[in-house]
Image 1 (cartoon, rainbow, N blue to C red):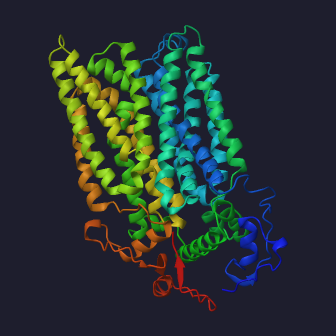
Image 2: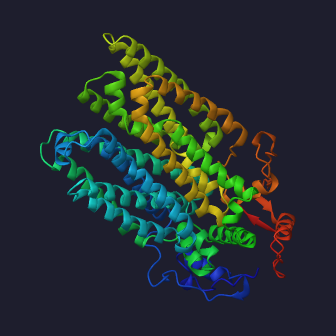
Image 3: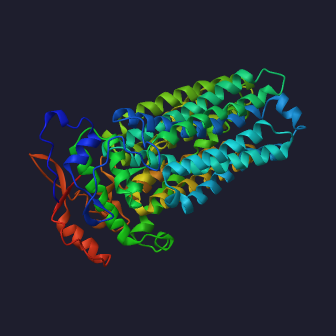
Length: 563
C-alpha cells in the first residue's frame, strides 16, 4: 500500500476528515491496482450530497431515522387494538363479529410477513436506503387507505398494504443502522431503536385512550391518520442520509463508501482502517458468491441465517404479543378489572415498558447477548407462571378476584421489564450481527419474516386461548420461556463487542452448531501498543483457497485492524 505525501504548506492543510483521507491515502477501485483521484470533501454521490451531518451528528441522525421506522412499527402494534373496541368504530362498520375483528387485526401481520419476504429478494439490489424509501411509500399508501376507509374491505386492504411496507422497513432499518455503527455501539444502536419502538406503543395507548370518549368518526380516523407524520419524517430524513458503507463496497462503489466513512468517522486513521477492514471482508464475501442455495445447504451460512430466524421466532413464542396486543382484554376478561381501569393500567404499563427498554442501553454491551437472553427468559417464565396461578385462582373464585387480579398485574409488569432487558432488542439486532455481509439482507429478511409469521400465529390464537384454555394459556408460555434458557446456552453465539468482521472470523474457526463445545478464543492478538489485530496473512490465504480464488499479487498488508 502506497501513501500520497501530505501537503507541505500549512495554508493548504486539509480541514475535514474526508479531505485528510483523500490526500493521505491512495485507495483501490474495484480491487484494481490504480490510484483514484482525490475527491473533494464536498463531493456528491449519485448527483447529490450523500450526507448533511458529520461524526456524532450523523450517527444521531441515522439513529433518529431508523428509530422513527421502529416507532411507527410500535404505534401500529397498539393503535388498532385501542380503536376496535370504541362504539363509533363498531357502529360505522356495522358491529363486526369478533372473528372478523381478529382477522382485521392479524392481516396486518400477514402483510408484514409478505413485505419481509419481498425485501429478501430485492434488498441487496436496491440498497438499504432505497429499500426504506420504497417500503415507506407503500406503508404510507396503506395508512391513507385505512384512514379514509368507507367499509371493512377498505380497512382490510389498508391494513394489508401498510403491513407490507412495515415488514420491508423492519427487515431493513436495523441492518442499515448496524452497518453504519461502530462495533462497540451496535447493541446500543438497536436498544435505541427498540426504545422508540416501545415509545410508539406508548403513543398509541395514550392517543386511543384520549379519543376513546369521542362519539364521532374521529375516535378511530385520527389515531390512524396521525401515522402519516411518521412517514413524512422517515422519507425526509432517509433521503438526505448516506447508504451503508458496507453495501457500497459490496457494489464496488469505493469512492462513495469512502465519503460516507469519512463523514461517520472522527479521524483519517479511522477512515483508512475501517475502509480496508471492510474491503477485505467484502472481497472474501464476494468470493463465496452467496445465493439462496447456500441458505438451505446445511453449511455455515444455513447455521448463521437459522440462528437469527429461530431467535425471532422465540421472541414471539415468548408471549409478548399475548400481552402487547391484548393487554386490555387480558386485564378485563382474564383478570376481571373494569374496562376503563384496564385501559389506564395498559397505558401505565406501556410507559414503564419504555423506560425499562431504555435502561437496557447500559447493560447490553457490558453483559453480552447470551447472559441477557438467558436471565430474561428465566424471569419471563417465572412471570407467566405467576400470571397463570393468579388468574387460575381468580377464575376459581369469581367473587374474590381483586387480590389475585392485583398479583397477576404485578407479574405482568415483571414480564414486560424482563422482556425489555433482553428479548425486545437482541432478536432484532442479532440477524444483522450474525449473518455475513453477502447474506445480511437475506438473513435479516428471513428473520423478520419469521417474527411476523409467528406474530400472526400468536395474535390469531390468543383470543381463542383466553376463551377455551383460560389460565392454562399462560402456563404454556411459562414452559416455552423456560425452554429458551437451554436453547440460548447451547446454540446462540455471543456477538457483543465484536465487529461484523470479527464474527465472520469466529464462524470460520467454529463451524459446529453447539456453542458450548466451540473454541471461545477470539482469534485476535493483543499487545500493549494498541488495539487488537486479526492476523490476516494465514487466515486470509486459507479462506481464499477454500473459495478457489487468487490473492492480489501486490497486497503486502499482512494485518487488518479491527475496532
